[in-house]
Image 1 (cartoon, protein in one colour):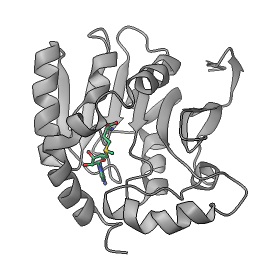
Image 2 (cartoon, helix red, strand yellow):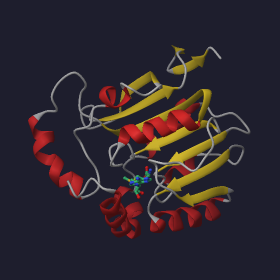
Image 3 (cartoon, protein in one colour):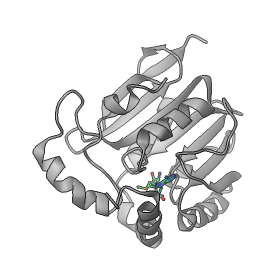
Length: 219
Ligand SMILES: C[S@@+](CC[C@H](N)C(=O)[O-])C[C@H]1O[C@@H](n2cnc3c(N)ncnc32)[C@H](O)[C@@H]1O
């Protein structure tokens, strides 16, 4: 479908960019904060944001980590740069396609995937890129909309999907299916709104044991 292409996403998010903060204001802050907390970022770690948008996640990141933020849409990155400046954060912000990251293998400790896996045209390709750029033992957090695994997406979601897709996001993707052939394991997941449609998920490049919602790596 034409709406599931980079060309359409860039077009639709260029239109969204000037009003994005206004429209989403107050909707997701608590979830962003919770998701980033699960990453348990340490001083000096290198963290990558894919599909970073206007940079609303920057409010929950501190200056003691190295932040690299990427997005397909130049209008989004322009806003993100201004937000970083306002917050006094040193952010390496770049226009980049999340399907083909211009970074070496194993060059990040953590990745933030907020509201991008349900948006990007080929989410499996993006997740494979995440696995490639994460160091062994690295982790990523996803906050997004997913249909339940192991069953067909509910009829209502299937009926609404062409419309939501037109506005920039899918609502019938299943995370278990997307991760099936990707070397990333779910370490923790929790519902995050709209009767479980939204989820916060911590994934890890290596198997790990989870204690109190935190993934303890064996490497
Ligand atoms: C719903 S917004 C989410 C923005 C931000 N992560 C947030 O949580 O507010 C989706 C973002 O994904 C970006 N995007 C869409 N396709 C992309 C791609 N192929 N590569 C990178 N970013 C993409 C859009 O430009 C848009 O900024």
